[in-house]
Length: 272
Image (tube, rainbow, N blue to C red; front, side, top):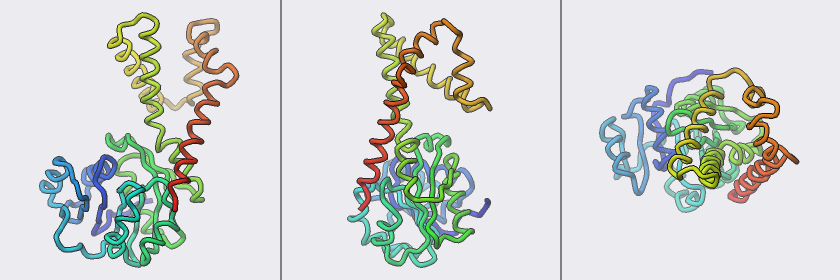
């Protein structure tokens, strides 16, 4: 699947995720002059970036209907922003949304001229080019538009396309929110080390480096996570003793399942 970047693109919402996506696109070859950014409170860094690459930031006159419109605002802002967004979505505009919980039907109701809509959910590692997005396309999205959306999303990491929109809320609960779960794991490991007598700063360094290293090993290895776990677990050893607590009665598995389910349920509640 390959395509050129859109000839014109409007990004609405240039916060952490929207800003990361824009930097990824620019790094992958999107021309700055093809971009218009709309954000009521742009950061100093975003203002400087737009000036440096020649992108238009909050133009006084509404931009022309673009080939692609990317929605990076918070989902709770959709209703308030709809009057500004609606004129930007023409019948031939590809709309790419990263609004958690907002369905294709929600978007069509607020953007009455929009036809081709891709609903996606990237995650925070997009800010370092290591994100992963789940995406689904409305029936009106052409092959060329899907390829274009794929290229935009791949500007910040991997992309997984799903066939049914109801799976996007599950993607949100797993990978969309997942980085926060991993960060909390680091916090928990550090606190556990501190409870065993380690100085707090040392416990945090050990926990952080352990998760960073394990993630990099998982990234570089062709082995499954299960096999990697087994490889580091000697029978009767220290790791086995720790895993007895995590895996006994499926303790961690059940906890993570409940965590992802709660996030998926909240994503569904945000629709409407």
